[in-house]
Length: 496
Image (cartoon, rainbow, N blue to C red; front, side):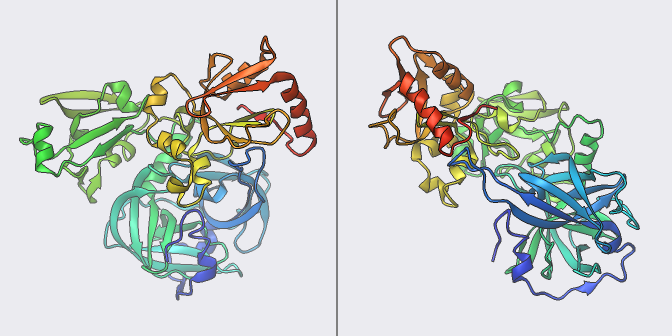
């Protein structure tokens, strides 16, 4: 059985019953180099954006690093309202704070809020090992309830590139095989080689007895970026591509005389490729001097075939430049691409949203939101079929909306039955275009437009689709707003 994120490792505590060996022969032991991490998480509601979910606990293990800091996965503290570090043996505890976090790389660094804490007494920081190769043995560390360390051997099957946590965001991965035993704090688990940190366990399949490990090279890049206090994150190229295996397609794109290459299907607005002039229809032959084959892979000197994405996220930083060799309309050219990181808030539709609530605005019972991927995912695992079709389509093809000048996609998500919305109760999931003749680029524009009193007392609200236009009474709507606050909606807007 495969466990979906973020519950996949937590489920180990209930379902797995595999044998392990006590870590007596390790050069350093789990009980001396890891701590328990206790978190309280409270997710935001995207269908009822003024609400939050029920607080839920989460327990994991963090790797102790130099300077009394603790490394965990970002999943461990997503939407956290409280974080705590606990000594594995003595049980000493201290409130923790986040030094740095990157949800795309699925990494977070914690430190104690109290410098006099006893949590680190007798503990030794872990050094790093980034020499892992296929065929080697690693150890997954856990802690018994009584504080004893437990180590499980796993074999590295291959080194690959895959998703960590955020859809569409891929990094280097170790794919390993081995049996893991259930533990109550098994959401995040350190993985070591010869007593040095080799990575953090991301997921586990009890059926296949395989797991994915976030490797130390990515950890070291994350920590190095944090050192100056100005975290930039990992760059992205900002393209979608198609393979060029079909010979007819290769003839069409005029690359029959080339050995490999990938076809650029889309170029994300404002991304690295877009700003460098990469165009839809270009064929990328090489990146940073590495030839890209027809499947989108290159030959790594240590790991073998890897996705070209590792060339962008594996050895370069935001601000660096890489060279791309292209074929454009049959002509070969070389382009320098300065690398940047497009933040989630810079997208028309946020691909993820953590530690902040959805932006919304309520007026007289009309509930408007900025569309985000988490909103669509609120419709369940089958959201691509269950969520409103027009919104799913907008998420898949945002370019037409961006070309209109929109910064965010504002839509009417639902309508509360009030005196101001009589006759409009069945309207939902329609994209907003204008209010009182003002084109709406984001939720702040909407709040400003409704803040102005219309000459005839009626606000004109225009949509892209049916019902096209509705009219809302300003005076009645403002009276309704006061009643909504009195009867349970404590906040009528979140604009930041």
